[in-house]
Length: 106
Image 1 (spheres, one colour):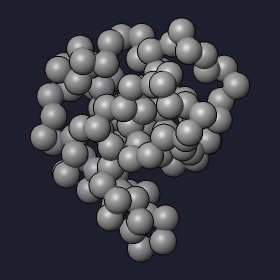
Image 2: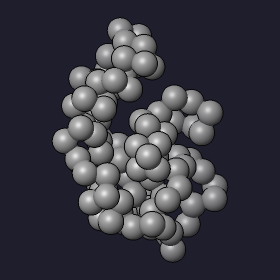
Image 3: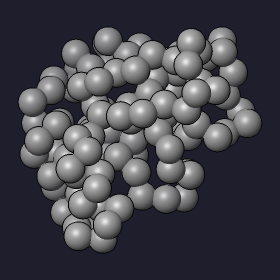
């Protein structure tokens, strides 16, 4: 399992590309599967982007509201070991795909 972001030049259509964001860039449509159970709700995204919550609070709320209701084994099986989890943020930025990757690795 890997993580990346939509603007990465390393992505190609032969990869098992899995979007875990609420929206997907138009240039990705058709080459990607959206896995809705891992998509954060808009209110959590908005609170973070508007600076109303910290990284730590986002991670806590994401775990409490999204990951706690999922079985990591079942999610891993559904995505496949070759999955590339995608979202909007650059690799050096805080993003829920890193939270998901850590949760799956644990």
